[in-house]
Image (cartoon, rainbow, N blue to C red; front, top):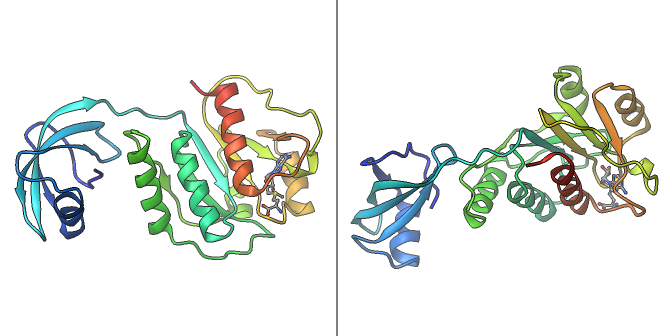
Length: 232
Ligand code: SAM
């Protein structure tokens, strides 16, 4: 269970209405039951139900069962697409160990708004599902041109360029450090964006193979390629 509360031995964790409904109504847990807790910051703790009400309850943290497992410092920048496919990208990026997820508005991006809270909730669910103790932050929507204007050159970019489709251009960089993967929208990157990205010394243009992948497939493929080349 995810709670937005510090976790440490002996700590009492209050449960709100939704959490109590889920734990006691849906999962049928009662006083004395053991529950695994994460908050995305303190690792995993095993806790015991102290009070189990319909609208409220509480748990007491017993001990830590997993330390916080920080992923590599990898961001995923992607242009939001249709709702269900954007949800998919956030879910898969969390499972694949992205440390931060940044929706970006490019020239050809159709969605101008995202529900950051919904996407963050998807990241929480995905972390719970895969037994992760870290939850990546889902940032608000940033404009790509502004993001690049303030970019820290220490953070290298794996720029997935559909214009290189079929080229044998794979990620050849070495060393970990700070990274970001960049995936474009359904319509790809504009010529201006491609020219700009190709000129950046810290951006590495890569091909993801001989076919144009859908943006959601491209995100998963790119995360896999990066993890294979530079992950731990
Ligand atoms: N029309 C499809 C869709 O609806 O999703 C294709 C989208 S593709 C243009 C979206 C993004 O995926 C591209 O901007 C690029 O970042 C990445 N991508 C897809 N195939 C790729 C490839 N073969 N090599 C590199 N990047 C690729």
